Amino acid sequence: MNDGKTHFFNFDDCSCIPYRYKSSSDGNMTDDLEVLVISSQKCQKMMFPKGGWELDESREEAALRESLEEAGVKGNVECELGKWDFISKSHGTFYEGYMFPLLVKEELDFWPEQNLRQRTWMNIKEARDVCQHWWMKEALDILVERLNSLNQQNEQNYPNICSDLVAKISSL
Image (cartoon, rainbow, N blue to C red; front, side, top):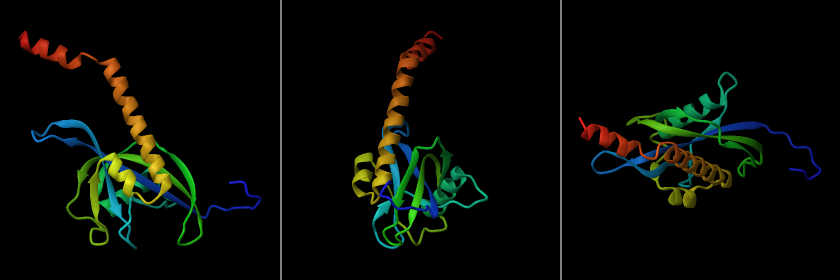
């Protein structure tokens, strides 16, 4: 941001994109990626869990805490997707937003903000369409690109692992 003015970043936000792979009707995991979006407290606009970063916690801990408080999910926080600078429309304040993927391991029935927010699992296109923040959409694109790249690497490194296992089991 180089408009000749001095800008101070007053706040840091840490956010997670909670994700999982959809289960098929027989309970097996599929390649269909889903992400969890939540409603804003102020309106029904959708976003990913986000909030302030306390000085006594890491960014990853803050992102995990916000996901638990706002969306009622726990899981593994993965490598940072990036940092975005933005202005809060409601406060006119500059923020630095850090985004992390969160591979969801547990979805709670009860969580601190369950009466304040709605949570919804969506496919990538739906989430991108409803998400209110441009920087969250960019982070979602980076997550999808990263996961697709990892899947391609796994397919290249282990192309016959399933057929090899079936052959070994069949020979027993």
